[in-house]
Figure: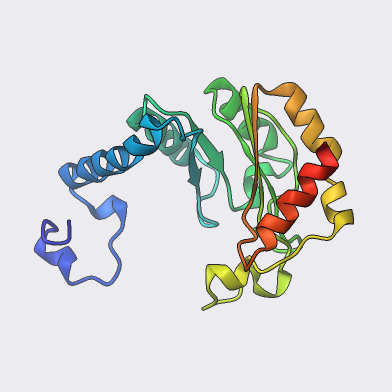
Amino acid sequence: MRQALPSQLKEKTNVYLRDLPVELTDELWKRFEHALLPLDSAGKLGVVLFQFPPWFYPGNEQRDYILKCKEKLPQYRIAIEFRHNSWLNEKNIERTLRFLRDNNLPYVCVDEPQGFRSSMPPLAEATSDIGLIRFHGRNRDMWEKKGVTATERFNYLYSEDELKEWVPKIRELAAKTQHLHVLFNNCYADKAVVNAGQMKLMLD
């Protein structure tokens, strides 16, 4: 892919999607779709997660891009995770949830550190027949720290009380959806496994 870049892009440290020729963008989508095929063929693929960065703000262009992602993968279900709370602020929450519902796009509920400008609230909402919850941990010291690894950012072990906060929310989401995925992304050592086991016992 790098060899196929126009000469003026080969010299750049960062290359953005908007700068790529259409034929290269199409090739990237083709390769991404091809990479999903083994999981799909084995019956292991639930949904394809599209996690948008903190600088992806609400707007018509952004909503159009989300629909383009869905269009590019017509045979798969995609789910949408936002990383900036402007999508759910007082001005935008109704429009955001309606947009997802109207287009049958699952909203990815998250648990993450609060108190940052980008912090997504721990909203439990179903916008499709599939529900997802991702537990990122609550490591405030590392959440927006520059230069840290993903492992350091998600180094957090939930307490039982913190997990219990989600039990009624999970039950409510399960009643509203046909499939509900509860994922622990606090991927440091065995912390995700420990917390997932605790949550399973609480739900049982």
